[in-house]
Image (spheres, rainbow, N blue to C red):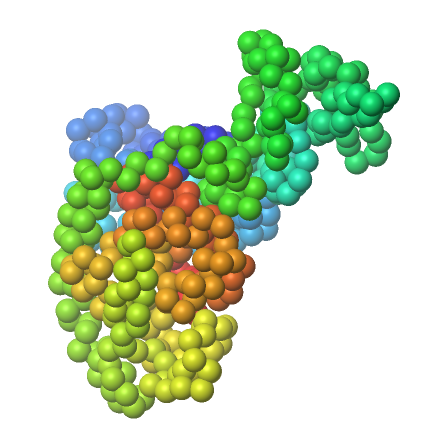
Length: 475
């Protein structure tokens, strides 16, 4: 995994993106050569903003491919879906480049070069994707990992590794600690378990070295729920000195999923792990950046506000703005403002309830406002007055917080920083409408708090734009 902007990305996926940027550049250089010949190619690429033109085209292609999920785990292994989305991305690139060339004509290649370049890109990227799919699915090219321990965390790591070949990880076995009692004394043994049989081990941790050698292992993940007296420190340290990568299972899970496994994590891990950089300077930066972005957002939203207000007024009775009590930093309750998207009496009979799919309480205009996220515009005022930040955990209602505190461990940790309009949980998980959803979103919120940094905020802004454009996650 590669850590960038305080988030983790599979090395193979990063390599795929960089290699495709190179292929796009190569395709357009070849297009110039085919269309104009060697002499004019040197002139255009050397003197007529050639490098800038190539960079603009490459960035446009990679951005469109990202926005069509061509680097997403669920799409990478589906060749048919990759082809369909690649065609869609190429069409979008044509529109985007046309707009760029209209705004700034000197960046245009002209003379049929763009059309030839697009054809070359489609051919090269299609062939490269097929080759990458084949190589990515070959188990021999993956790191071979053993997991020491058992339980839900182990199962979760195994599922992630099996479902996402781009991680380059293959779990080849599990080492289970077993306590045997004989003549009144207990002995700690280790055994290698797989789906078909169990192999007995000796009464020392040295047997682990034999497992590593026989299975050609280069990684060991420690995922034991109880380590005191069960962890073979000496043999593991010896293996680490021989080049075997020893990693904490919780760290591995955090890196490959982008969330903290709250049900399997120890309080000590949260206490002593790196991260949680909630410093005074960072909070000052977040306050300043959020204020500036909120002002810019309000200025751009001003032309839309009268039309949104008029649409709400003409299609349903009740106030235009809707305010709702939410829990903010340090448990302080504040009023969160939104454009009203439901009937004025939506909770008259039921009391506070989560929104559901195709919720009948949502008005026709309200459904559009939710899908386009225009209903969130008034929350920029909450950012300006300091109740919220632009990025952070989504603020929850006090009625739900009381229940979630009882049912979910570490839930109050999300109240150590200001809540946000968008956040790591919002861009990685669906709309929350149950205790289980709230638990899953907390896993993402804790990852954000643990890795909070300006770079991660920038990544969240970028992904939020993608979600808004594609209309995802609304309810």
